[in-house]
Structures are given as C-alpha cells and as structure tokens.
Length: 220
Image (spheres, rainbow, N blue to C red):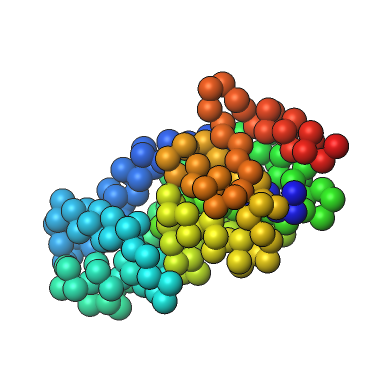
C-alpha cells in the first residue's frame, strides 16, 4: 500500500453534500441575480454540472468543460466566472454550520501518512480548490502535505467515472493496485475497485475507526 485516497464529505467531514449544495445554489445564484433570476440560474448551473459529470474529454479540465457549456447556455459574459471565485472567498465559508468535523479525521490522516505513504484527498472535483480547501479546514485536516487534492481546475474526470481514479494514479505515480480508497458512497467510490484499487467503504455500520484498523492490518 503506497497511497491512501480519502473521500471528503461523509468520510473525513460529517456533512450532507445534498444539504450543502442546496445552500450553495441559493448563495451563488444571488451573485448572478443582476443577469438571471435565481431559478433560471440554478437550472442552467445544474445542467452544466451534469455535462461536466458526464464528460470524458482528457483535453479539458472539469472547470473548462463546465464553463464551455454554462456561458453559451446562459449568454453570460465568460468573464463573470470571477463571481464564482468571489463567492467562494466571501460566502462559502459561512456554510461551515452545515458540517461537523469527524473526531477521528486527523488521526486517520496522520496514520495514513505514516511509513511514507502518499495521501490524496479524492473528493469529487466539481469545485475549484478554494471550496475544497475550506471543507478540509472544517474537517480539521487542511494543513497536511497531501500528494494531491483533486479539484476541477486540474482533473479531467469526475466520479463515478473510473478514469477519475486512473488519473489520480497517474498524477501521483502509484499503480492502482498499490492504492487504497476510503469513501462512503458505493456509487461514486466503488469504481476505484474496478480499476484495481483496494476499497474500504464506510457502510453497514463501518466507521473511520474500522478504516484505521484496516490500514494497520494491511501494514502488518
């Protein structure tokens, strides 16, 4: 085991991504209300996000795919993409109340770093780095020397596309069979196993404490 990959929401961070995303929609739509009514903005935002999730283009990052669909769809000036960045800086941190740090998050991350293991934050890269780093801050695990944090400005695939996991393997220089993926979502995290990664799912009552035992057992 040369690399350990962690999902974020529901794994290192106790949060409901669905609840978070609804608050996100409400907040970000207010930044574009001068040009689009909120309901229209959210409709187009969701449509372009689905395009990004379904895309399989290795020549465009996820954010590029999103922008290439969203701005023609809405007839908005592409320069307004800076409003997303402003929202992430000014308003997104206020959503911390919707999440709770898992008390074992720091412990398992530090365990993962033991013995020179590479550690990856393998959250679905539908956002740029800023809101992902903010959620890592909420989880209390931001200030670690991760080999990779997957985000929309560098990744070319999203979960559950198996190519997402293969791209991580390539970027960190570790073969899939030498990686362990720890996540909580069978639909989005299980494709790691399809490309040869070991997989530990936090389901059927299994917790981060069980994942820590699994990591320790793999090293014995």
